[in-house]
Image (cartoon, rainbow, N blue to C red; front, side, top):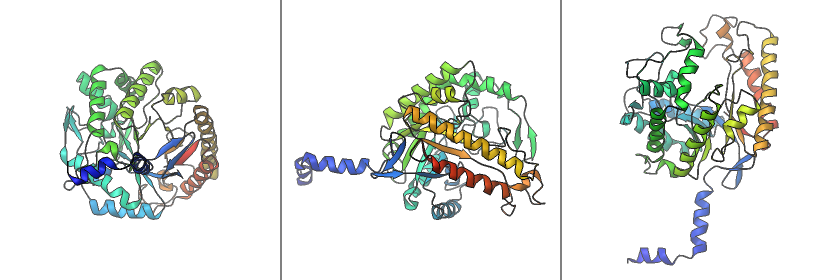
Length: 387
């Protein structure tokens, strides 16, 4: 036995425990209805940065200088958490509409190492900006492949795409939304799809970062693992959904017991659905999203105050309800998504394109201010922040 090994062996147990306690404190943990890090309350001030792993690539669509600029800007605004994707799936039928490329998973079990390394690189940058990550392990929607792509692989059938905006061609394309939901619901109970999904969970959580040499499951800069972005509550599949959440969360917890686990739910379907999607003891952080345009509360063609006031009123009720429901489960929740387009989406704000950063944001500013005010009212009493 060498002298270093000997000294390590004779370090008092209390000293070893002190070191371990200090290391564990670096992880974000849930305490009743609030979060803590380094023995202090941790409030999520987040942003969604879905393109992270592709922009983090060293080649192809990678743009690391842009990422560093974005992180610097976000950090200067007080952002401390990024919600990023560690999943994207390719179609076996060739190019699919409006999808992230290149995909991380080319086919079940086959990965693009360049994209992997892009994810490694982005995670390695976060501590330099005092940020953590909430990492999504899947997506219900087709823009990254997602749950419908797992069903497509498992059944070797084409996805019946819902009506959606094609950003490349600037037109709406696709078909019936209910048909898409019925197709994608099979993800929850298709044996092959579930096997491949859990294989992906294991591949991600047991990966060692090629930049930092730290295993993902032991990285304190990862705040939480999200099972999926916006898994949908679909009538007739309630039991399958609850089982999928519990089984998947249990697996994540077994692999990364120091990290939080969240379902990724929008929590838009009322108290019963909320509790069903967060009841698992392995889900340690609740989730909700609020999208006034998508849910029919906001009229993008109405320049008057009425439309945005209705959206704000609906949001306030939504936040209060979610705060109550999560308190009843004695868990914290985070508003992981909310948003509103620029005024020009409805063309009443001027001639600039809807995505032009010079376009006005009159209604958006009013809405965001109202969101922050309402979430702040419920901090540590249900809510632990917003992104």
